[in-house]
Amino acid sequence: MSGVTILVRYFAAARAAAGVDEEKLAVADDASVADVLAAVRIEHGPDLARVLSRCSYLLDEVAVRDLDAPLGTATILDVLPPFAGG
Image (cartoon, rainbow, N blue to C red; front, side, top):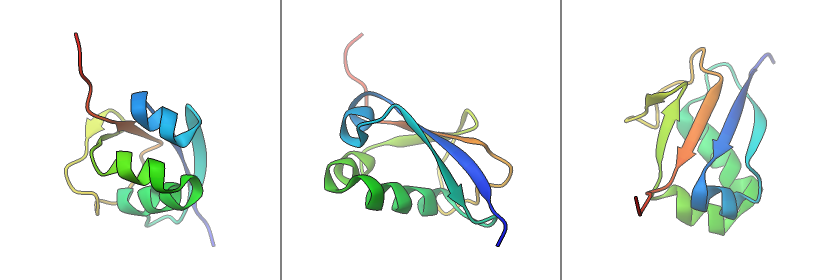
């Protein structure tokens, strides 16, 4: 099986829940954003799963609206929880 590697970068509350700033994941060639999120939920548990339900995502700096969208040639997935303050 071939595959691709995606760098997942966590910000703010997502970083705290994951316990890491970033991590690389090996995924199938046809993986979607949802597939990556399922893998990190398994890896990091319910605290991160709760945060992910409120997050928005960037795939190579482009906003993701459809989590079933394939990763394609993307190499970075940013996990962005809601931000407050200013």
